[in-house]
View 1 (cartoon, one colour):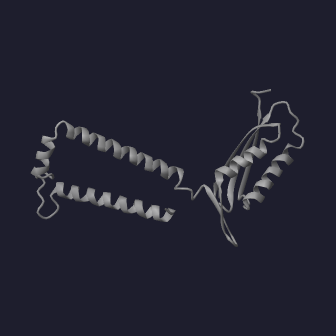
View 2 (cartoon, one colour):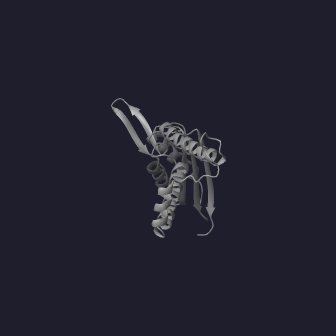
Length: 184
């Protein structure tokens, strides 16, 4: 599902929930024609069924509420993380079709390339933003006590190889180098 379709879907769901809440509120306040503010909203048949289902009706309502809460939380987390693979996949059109590159694979490859030098203990790469002009955030931890001559060239070469492989030039590049003092 595309981002636009996803936004339309959740806009419709939100509008339906707001409309339902508005109708129930108007019924409760007696603002709708034929509505009595003192009347019970549930019919007698439904109330009778609820009483006959005791205590299992309350348990079923609790389980349904729990499932609704868990599914709502799951949907919220999906929204916060991103929808599908749209934000985590770089797509490059070509003469014979499109090439899709998973951003996670690209970041892992760049991390492996950076840690290929024994002077770099760890590397962390984060790729964000537009797939064609992404923001590239690098954090390298250098082994304490090692010579750093030529290290800048190694990092620059790894970034050049990344740019050539992904065929995209970073809009923003941030490299943070830290000395890993814990493992001298």
